[in-house]
Length: 434
Image (cartoon, rainbow, N blue to C red; front, side):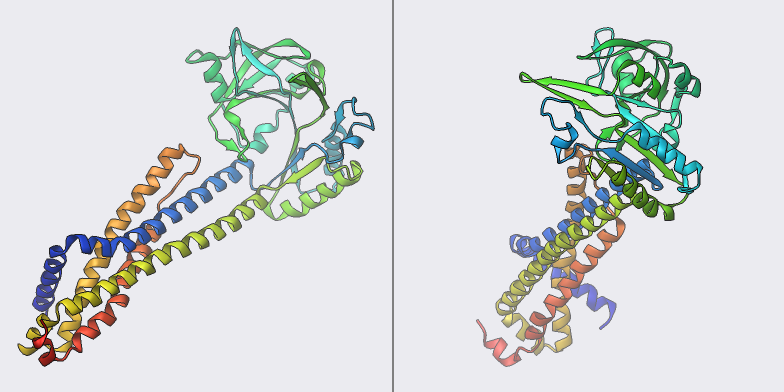
């Protein structure tokens, strides 16, 4: 068998498939769906993984985040009275204790400890309200642990903290929402709520655009101001009124960011901090220790299970497509029995017949694979576009190659049996077939 024979066999195979276009398309449909599913599912999984990696990178792979959470036992938190304010979460004493432990070497691997308080104040400029803004009281070290940076102007300083200067730094999103194309530096905004007097803050800086932190807060809409100003102006009590009811909460610190010197110290330090908080808070369970690397591991495990399930479904589709090819090929053998007999009578050997049928099944599977690759890439782009980044996708080269190779392999594997059946037809009996 030389090249001209293969070329002629390929031409005959394509011609035969072209004569039955609808049947050929329906035969390859399973292959198309399977390849499309493999590429699209891997693209969704890869996009989700990259999104998680980006979030963990923004949170910091060497960061530990201590958070205040409402306790399960609210009776203890309200000190026995259902009308008393709900006291819970991190306290300034916790922050000072961690700092003391760092100074005295008990937590020697910690580089920075930064307190954060969500003041829950409304941010207003004249009559324009920044509806998505989050007022964040913190210290000058915040950019060192939160991977944020100044676009223009400056961040908070030690002098701002000492003198309780009413200054603020705007995230890129809130700056655009309040000031549009106008330069915010030197301009003034107000922070106000139902239970405190409105306070005026001077804008001294604007941050570079960033993404969503930990999947919960868009830092582009953060407004940073000195922690000492929060203590002096707004206090620790938060009052919320809704539907005729009033909720009062007393929270001193919302979060404490802790950055360690190396990744290897993250989990031991997190465990030590967790034990310290349990003792200091008398097992009230009103704090939570979050480790971004642990979030990454959990996301990776969930993603692995998702990929396994989706990959199984996709491979099942390819299997169904292969069975479809085999069924149609067997039916074709019956239809072309007389043709096979004539070819055998004219000197064609069994290997020639096998090659002919394998070429046809390969054409079906390769064509289905190519269409499936295009459909899979198109579906991935469509999901990314329609979800507007909520479900990002990323098409990987290896998934395209793997899906295409598997589709071609399906054509060979499921085409072998019909080809052998065709090759073993008795020439005399085949010639008698109507």
